[in-house]
Length: 334
Image (cartoon, rainbow, N blue to C red; front, top):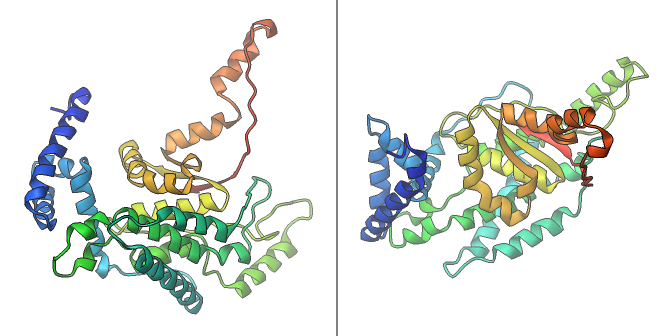
């Protein structure tokens, strides 16, 4: 009924959640509800899959199982990669991430606030302006450790799976943790592995050939370079984009995640809103469809409809409210 009558959706979801809470108590190790979720996902009518996607209990369980199945993910590359540099940065990330989890994984409640404060102290205050983007080696080298803090907070925020599975064989597999390929994907997206020698060579050639009257060209100073990363279905696009967005927002950018689907945008934003709120960057991360993203960019200087209206209405009838705000440099991920 809630599929066709939106007004019933909240009520129906609430009743489903109540039922799942009762069912969950019968299987305290979490395995029973996980099996139920798997069976519902295979429902040929499609209704079961919709139930799994909506209530948080089942969605989180399926998310956990999805991540656990990612051990067979592969990595295909189409350009030169500095593998030694990537390996070094991954080890830096992994060492800190493992240490933070070991020190803070406790049932009485981890000190997430301390982790967040330490992360912010580590990166310092960085301002990114549209006409002055800072993305030098000093900032890039901070990304692996900043990611370790973000992923640690994400893991600890979802540690209830781990504690619910107390006494179950292989309890550690119930702990939400990032896959290696997701870490590498973010490194590649942000250009963390770029070979400095190649960049200098390209930069020199561009500077030699570009007309002198062109300023702010690609080779003029270190900047974020556009990269393409393909992540297959069920291989963790949502968490990869969420952490990449969080990294960029903490480093001073205004981030937009664009999708063809409004439903998927809302769902992913809601899933990671606790993480964005925890780091205080929720106002600088936007999940939109491509159409809404374009509309928001067009209206940044003011609502186009209001601006046109102001052109027509006489000055003495206009009502204007001026507001000042700091404009961050923009970064778009889709």
